[in-house]
Amino acid sequence: MEFFKAHSGKMLFVAVVAFLSFVGFALFQAPAGGFEEKLIWLLKEYGYIILFAWSIMEGETGLFMAGLLCHTGDMNLFWAIFIAGLGGFAGDQIYFYTGRFNKSYIHKNLRNQRRKFALAHLMLQKYGWPIIFMQRYMYGMRTIIPISIGLTRYDAKKFAFINLLSAWVWAAITILPTWYFGEEILKIITYAKEHWYFFMPLGMAIAGGIYWYFHRATRKNVSEETI
Image 1 (cartoon, rainbow, N blue to C red):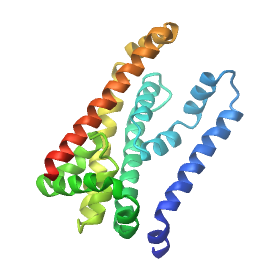
Image 2: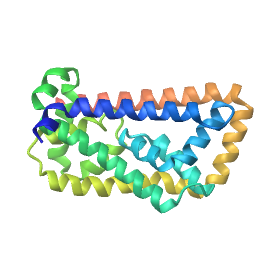
Image 3: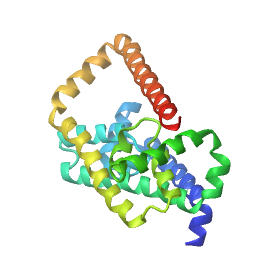
């Protein structure tokens, strides 16, 4: 336990590097032609492992891909939601205990995020346990909030229980619609690939707009809550 307290951040870094190395090696060894075919093979062959690791890193893209694989029959819907939820749960538990066991490191090295930490603390006081559900959908705060809760005396068992439920809800509300509308989504993807010259700049513009909106909204909320 003491070793984990002292090296939790390094252990997370090593785990991420190991996962990326595994993905890179598997892609290189994949018995397929182009990169797209290799990626599809990788997702079908190691789908649940990748989904779990991807969910730890809080990626909706992984849930989206899992929903499509459930639609095509390459993944089981129940197990995809279950495993993605466990991954999301594990990720936030890591962040929570990083805050609990590394307070001095966080205060020293994350000074540029202190206003967000202050906002997270105020939101925890204002909303209580529902903030554990809400944080998964708050751009710019998804990592900060569990770390911030770990910095407080919030009960670890209570956090873990609520975190697990919220992770399964998070996985379900992304995977289920993708699975249900899978045929329509695949048609759109095929059409977008054929007309990439139009959809690429459109996608970049939409992504940039979403980033700008949530970044602006987060800064506005930080200013309002910390005044």
